[in-house]
Amino acid sequence: MGAGQAGLHLGIGLLMGGHAVTMISNRTADEIETGFVMSSQSMYGMALGFERELGIDYWQHTAPPYSAAQMRLADSEGRVGLFWQGDMGEPGQSVDQRIKMPRWMARFEELGGALVIEEADIATLERLAASHDLVVVASGKGDIGRLFERDPARSPFTQPQRVLALTYVHRFSPRPGKPAICININPGIGEFVSFPGMTRDGPCEIFTIEAIPGGPMDVWADVRTAQDHLAVSERLLRDYFPIEAERIDGHLELTDDKAVLRGRITPTTRHPVATLPSGKPVFGIADAVCVNDPITGQGSNNAAKCAKVYLDAILAHEGPFDAAWMTATFETYWDYARYVVDYTNMTLTPPPPHMLAVLKAAESDPGIAQLMANSFNDPKSIAPWYYDPAAAEAFLASRAVAA
Image 1 (cartoon, rainbow, N blue to C red):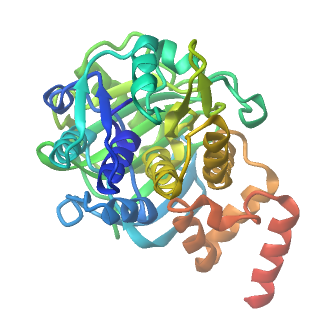
Image 2: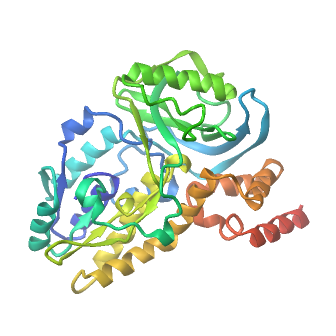
Image 3: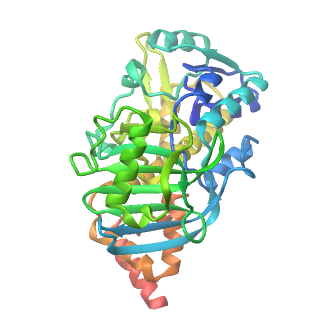
């Protein structure tokens, strides 16, 4: 249930593995294609590789790649307190989901999948659970989302940490040098994250403004139209990220009148198994049970990686898909996802001293900068030294000795 990055990835993989699959979507492919943007969907090597395994990486050679990452900490006057950049081992890409999901829906049907368009509710889940061996929920909205209980041990936040504004634009020049994902931090105010992407009319720049709630960039409450959204975005960029604002060619221009999205996300991990009134279990996937703030660009990557874990587990399994199997399968995913949660949450909060020491060291140590650039692809790759003070101290000492 849910025809997004995780649901379609899993559904297509299961069809290719010989299973019969029903997909529930509340929108048709045409409605998705002509609707508002849904995500920034920045994706990196590992997740793109999982798409390639299924032959659904249709934009590998057409979407603009980016092969580097940078982080800049600077105030509203452009005074830089920290800057590093590093190369990625594999390029990243971002393909507008208004292009991607309709193409994947077509592929799902080409493979013999049953695509059903309806607004799903608890009764829908009951019907599916009665007629299918396994029900996977890839949408966390409404009554269905509330089925999956928050896991307080894995969810440090109880409210959104940022006010989000996503925009697809033209007339925003590429950064100097290699195309890159760029994270810009204005301490105490918020962040500006940008990278190249492909939308319905071709290449574009995609950016997200992340405002600290109650701060000077939290000015979105009265914004109603796409043009108002664009005007506020440009003003905030000029006022709080003047170095990045130098990339504006005259004035920003929307790629289309539905190229904007605003919202707030409370980073939350939920228990992966929900029990329907009938007593039957259903299984949550990706954002339905582990959603992060988009500040580190992990959402679509997590969806692909979670779908890969679930796909492999289903194809290897013999016997009933009971709650114990569901829990064990999610824990396999959590062994990776817990690093993503820490990686993202540490970026949302004032950095602990060891994290700041690592990021500062990346300025002068190209090796560390490259490790941090590749952490977008795999946040687990920088464990334990990015997440643990003692390990960070030992790691930095070893780098100093090597130097």
